[in-house]
Amino acid sequence: MKKLLVLLAIVAFVCTAFTAIAADKGPAVIKMDKAKTGVVTFDHAKHQTASDCAACHHTGTYEACDSCHGAKDDGAKLKYKSAIHNNCKGCHKEMKKGPTKCKECHVK
Ligand code: HEC
Ligand code: HEC
Ligand code: HEC
Ligand code: HEC
View 1 (cartoon, rainbow, N blue to C red):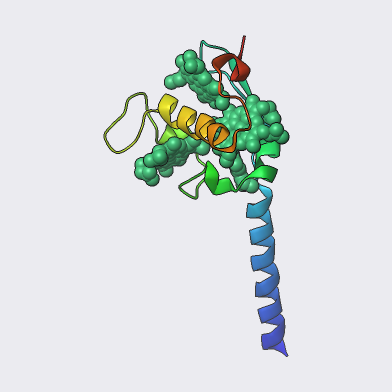
View 2: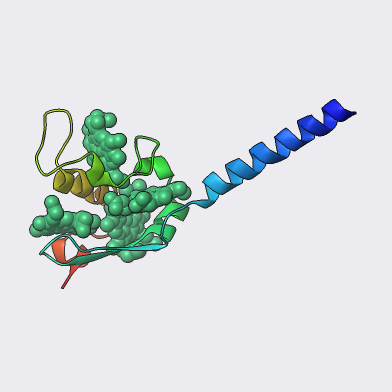
């Protein structure tokens, strides 16, 4: 009986831990303001309902893209600007949905 209770306690703990991880979906809307071309208002929550996390967070982690993709191509990885543009525009082109022109994304 005691063993069963311990087991149940462990199961409950693991479930809570997983729920906590799954609940961290990041911000619903992300204002991306690094480009002089204009601010990109990215509806993260809407994109999460339409695609897998891994369509963008392709390494299985949720670090900022520019923590790996730097200011210049380094042979192994595209620079930040190309990585983000290929990801965003690439999918929009492929799906024939979503903006592909500069000013449809970058708003001054
Ligand atoms: C599908 C949306 C989208 C389109 C279309 C788009 N961009 Fe971007 N662009 C972004 C996002 C998102 C970022 C990242 C901005 C940030 O991190 O603040 C970005 C970043 C940039 C940056 C800065 C990169 C850096 O290293 O900081 C420049 C410059 C830029 N875009 C110019 C353009 C130009 C010029 C066009 C048209 C030829 C264009 N973008 C089209 C979404 C888009
Ligand atoms: C269409 C692309 C896309 C999809 C799909 C997506 N995300 Fe994101 N997510 C982003 C971008 C872009 C950022 C901002 C990253 C940055 O600042 O470089 C972000 C940021 C985050 C952050 C905050 C990271 C930080 O510390 O700044 C978390 C957490 C996160 N996403 C979780 C998720 C989860 C969980 C899913 C799936 C349910 C998901 N995302 C789906 C593009 C996406
Ligand atoms: C932990 C480091 C890391 C993070 C974080 C990361 N990337 Fe990458 N990315 C890489 C590496 C390494 C490659 C090259 C190898 C590969 O394709 O997996 C790459 C490749 C890419 C490619 C090119 C894939 C192809 O067509 O060959 C795109 C586009 C891209 N990343 C976009 C993103 C975006 C957008 C984010 C943020 C949502 C992001 N990356 C976050 C490391 C990272
Ligand atoms: C896996 C595919 C995919 C990726 C990756 C993706 N998008 Fe989208 N995006 C879509 C689709 C599909 C729509 C159209 C949604 C609709 O019409 O309801 C869209 C629509 C949009 C719109 C129009 C307004 C809105 O929210 O409906 C903006 C702006 C946008 N995306 C920005 C981005 C940015 C910035 C990135 C990269 C950080 C990105 N998208 C990456 C699929 C994607």
